Image (cartoon, rainbow, N blue to C red; front, side, top):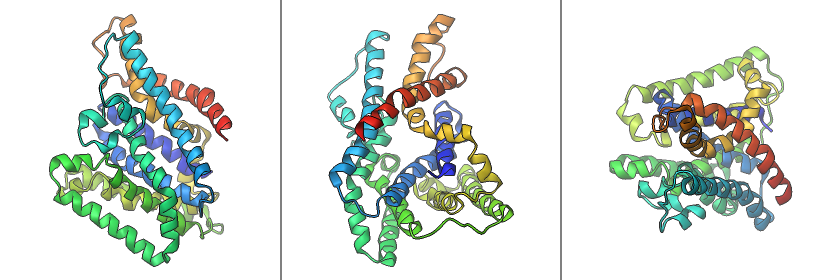
Length: 339
């Protein structure tokens, strides 16, 4: 386990939650975080699998990680709606959400419906299904040719963002074919880094300088987007964050075990722990907020006052506790069974 990358998962997950609670200063970290999660997934899968000997075993292990928790959250959302909120608004698109196919629909009232944040799993599912074919394809190419192919795909996505209307530009954020480019870029980083070793002979001062340089570059990209640069806004959904995110992933890998001061902080147990439950934190945020808004808040005399955008202080402690409980009592036991 690369502890710094695990901690970054937790940091980005919390930033995404903060943004969803109307803390708009986390907008850039949210956009970068989504790209980071797709790229990191591709990066880690190629570190673990230079080749996939058993496609069936790969699918069984990967799909068993996302579907059970997704079904648990979706079922809890439906139960809360029916038993407590006394409403039923489920239609023909529910089976597509159950099977994580909703991100293929361009309508926002479909791919953002029900368990709203599961669109990420829908796009990730396509990446997982495509992984064996992608690995075989990339392994057949020379390193240079593979990079040319991946960069060409990145150029196509970037060009499409400029050429598309506002509607389609927004849809690129959830579209599986767009996100598989992020995922494949992460795979190429993993293939390249697989033959590299962590930097062993490096002082803590040099390691800190490298880490601070990467954070500075990341801050520059955030500042460019935050100032409303037209070019940056056109490619904000993924392309803008490929460079800083790649540097973050590669640096964490190369400095693993020889971190500077930034890495030392990131390897602290509380941050690593937060990264370990980041999947649950991300996926359960809407469910926990609904529980707080419609179950807990009314007992405090605030029914109807708290809405999704304005109850961060009340929801975030409950979210962390619930995510931790589900991680240890559900996901860890489920992983033991599926192994």
